[in-house]
Image (cartoon, rainbow, N blue to C red; front, side, top):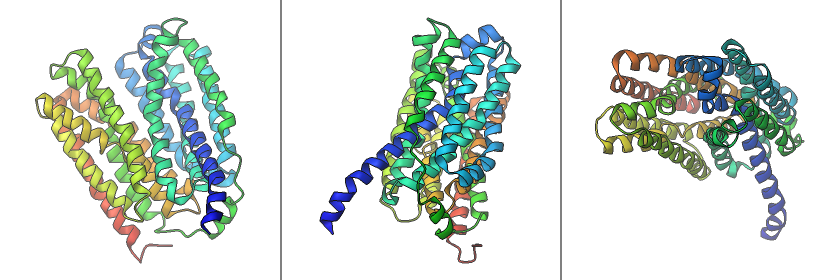
Length: 396
């Protein structure tokens, strides 16, 4: 038996790696429009004449549309399979990037085109989730989901690189054109449709119904709202504490690196646990809330500790959440994760708006403490969701 596994395992392993790479690239491409707008905000604002508040509103609308499109996107993935939906998402993202380059002559048009690209985000994320569930062996899915979710910070990095390489030389519109070309180049990386999708849909066992997923989705809303404040306000908050602009920027770099490593590392760890993944997320959020509290404390040591705990545990859970939900709902991974992903997008929409307004009215310490309270409540809801999943009375 050992010899048979050794002969058959390498091709399967190579296929799993290629599927994971395709899912990761799809995720990067489909979220690139919003991060490219953020990375090129200075150049865009100079020409289209909008303020930082206008940028925040545009990003919030993007995530709001993503939340609205999540459940319908999950239904499309379950209906047509992950491969065609992933290709459609990539094409939509590329079309949106080209449209911004050619048609964005005013702020309202930019917001409308960015909102259009949000549908690509929802489609691409859920198609990637389903592809990993369909093609990657169960004992490697945790790491695969961790790597896929680490692609989101990677998209931020690519957007940052676009500024000196393209935007400051050829102009910001050509940066969007280049991104569209890169998006189209990802199409061959999308794996072909699997043959076992219908069998899995027919034979898979549903664990816990939609009730626990809704509770986990609500927890994700609060957690994402709090965690998104890290990426949105950390630099400005650090500068308000007296750090130089360069050092304040380095705090975000540190947090992003910690977040990437934590998402991958926790995915690897998840493959070595047979259960309790949602409970583990609750523990991460509890620790992350401590990190947010430390951000409200003066001094460099609390700042560094807060960044490490906040990013490393308070914002490293999305991949683990997707893995846990897919593991519990193998027969409909896209439909199941569409519910929890709606919560993530809703938090991305509401968090910067609400917490940004609070920071402006009461200061950053009050904002960080409020974000910590939201993350703590999210941890409690995750515990409730885990308990509901274990309940024998949960609907089938």
